[in-house]
Length: 251
Image (cartoon, rainbow, N blue to C red):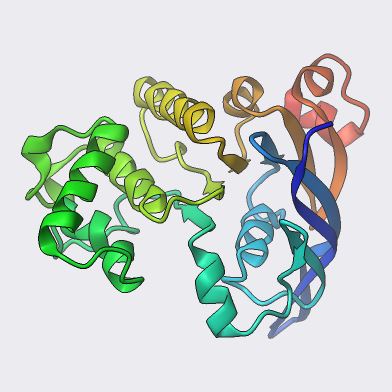
């Protein structure tokens, strides 16, 4: 029996808007096993990105429990959250807007290492950055280049290297290939898969694209209007969708 790394129980996130309360995430529950991928699928605005960010506590939950490695992290203090950040990371959708244009590749990747004072000397930091660049398939000649000089695929590799800098156990991948060309999408998905196998990473993979998630996720949860309407192993969901909304998405 695989070990559970994450359990989400009755997660709710409401936003106050000028039109009243927006129920972005409405009573969402699921579990994620260590070393596996849960695909969170749905159209834009269904609450999937909000779910991912709320689990990471980048957005405060309205109510519900987030159990990470047996610990309820839904009400952790900022200082305890800081320690936890090392284990939980986010890969953003748009590799361009999520990278600081004034910083070089090496400065961007080393940012979390410096902020958390993981390594002391510049030599150690440079060596670690070089190792991370190699891990994600970035050539060493790009060490001092800037994001705008690179294509989308390489920029996304920088984002992945930055997420890996803290040696996390769990990563929320928020539409990580939707801004990329189809040919590059496959490269990034293969890289994420390799890293998962090598490092035992657990992923929540957020996407609106069922074709992408089909080959990548072990299990798929379909979201509609803030709720999970169906959850099943990937193969089963594609061969035998039960919910009308899932059927509509597949067609």
